Length: 401
Image (cartoon, rainbow, N blue to C red; front, side):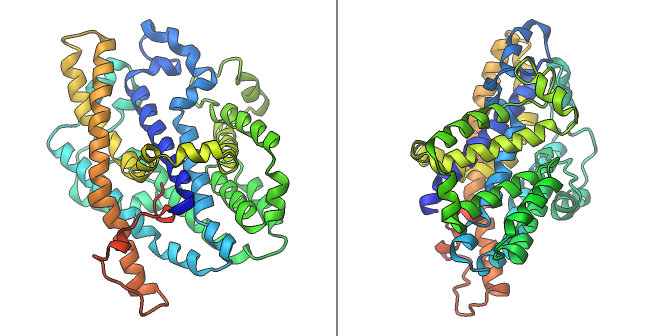
């Protein structure tokens, strides 16, 4: 992971923001202009840059920009396609193992009737929470969804957080194809412009931004030096916070309303959140204080468990959190119930995420490396032992949403 561990720290923070966003969706919709009327006095937060702390849409855009950057930086640094081939060969298995595990756990929880989110969503007035797990679980459907639908059709009813996986999977191969076809062309920036125009209204825009940034930093140092100015970076950081906090819910407030009026199209938040994510990652690569912060042990740990955190937390919210809320709401006030539920749930989520990382995610990385070494690696003398500790080593290339 080396000097790029700060990228993992950034990914970890983005995953945590998604978790917070989903607790807000479930229990504190007043922070998004909805929910229980007695708490709507907090709506000013949703109409200011403070909402970036629970803006899940922006966090997802961070994931995609980081993916575009991390998947290509070695190619632009070394101009060697073998790294792209290796990453492409590992991609499906690397993503599959944690996905399969999370969907299987959801299936078991449904069979045990532990998914109590619907009744809680009715109490908290969360249309988001009531929509999950209203179907009859099927082992056959669960397996088919894990191995095929999540990746190729986007269907993710057993774990709706996995809606991003199809984009991540297709986006990764879009990046691989671009680098293989155009990565060494002198005028590849023309292709970048065309891709930006084509993907301007989708999440794939983040991947394009990530590749451009990777090329600037590692592939063309002269161009990077031209952009790598402190004043410019400060401006981009501020704009990144502003665009990253553009809400995709409710009333936009005076800070954002004129932007929506100007664009007047449904994908405004995706477009602006993607630009904001690009600016924030740009600033991260420039500012030493950001690198230092995101390279601290707590942030690196958060990054290490980020994929597990992302794929497992909704299952906790819909089971443990919902059951606990149903009990507490009969005993104490709404506010105390929410604070208690969120506090205890976060402890459980971090515990589950760490165990999932250690015993599932890391093994998935090792399995992906093993399959590549046995089936695809051109180096026939390369160690292909699945139990080799080096194959379990966590590297920033293989660990992402």
